[in-house]
Length: 132
Image (tube, rainbow, N blue to C red):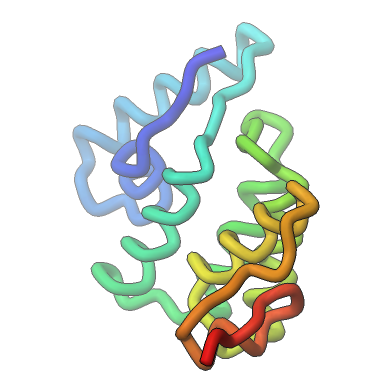
């Protein structure tokens, strides 16, 4: 199984560079035709959310929709996929950043709670506690 870096996913999703888009499409098409899935590390998920929102101006709702579609794609396998699905659910409901939701979800899946933080917004996420 091959893995994808954030920049390949960004090119595929944003379509802002025709040459790199063609390469990304070709890679994904080849893997699909060969019955191979592509692996997405948790760190790529974090960076992808940040890139889409901060660099390309995607709204939170659009980012949630994109991440949800990627998570449900049969062609992709995510590291800690169940935790990322939980993180996305938490992110939908919280004012906290996606990264904070991922941290909380990974801690929950590891059975290590609460996740202690000084971040007031993050502390509103289930499984996160404010350290005072």
